[in-house]
Length: 260
Image (tube, rainbow, N blue to C red; front, side, top):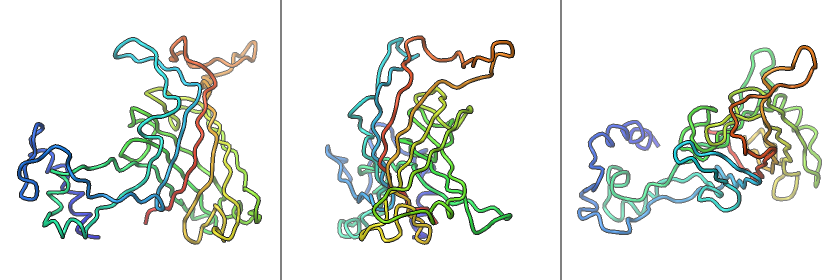
């Protein structure tokens, strides 16, 4: 595994010296049409299936509205790893793989357990969903970057029942965590973790193996800036394009294993 980390660390340097029009390597000297793919999908480690509905956004680059409803090229996202056996058989190196073969996007969706010294037995589960190749931050993705937290995940795991999904709702109304196509939104996450079953003996909240899986419906609304001191009515952010539709939603099936 160390060799993989080293090549990842040196990948930006490789890019600096690569030709944008054509990349030649010993393993693929002519760079033919239809480059080979030496990556194997790993949907067990990370799988996110996401579909948006009722979207209508404004594109500042061309002045037209667009939607991301239904089929997109990122609806089904999985992790992947290099097929080392095929690489060795074909006489390739990692340099060949990264410069002269198909390199699929390593989607940055992830789950992490964060521990607090005040109660180290009950961590917070942090989940990030994105079709970008970098970890979600709420600021770095041009498409979508969605971030949520579930505190007391150990206590929630103890409520799991065989055959019954475990429900949890997370509401985030502040600026930052939820971005879709360069705009921030308030979001409500209605989550159903998969129930305990013969195939999931620890349920969809498997803290021992750091596996989390289930379904969520995300509902997006305008962010409230403040409440009018006289009327008490909410005053919303004024950055949304006039024809943006609210609410819009996303349905997500997920399986995430915490990275070491």
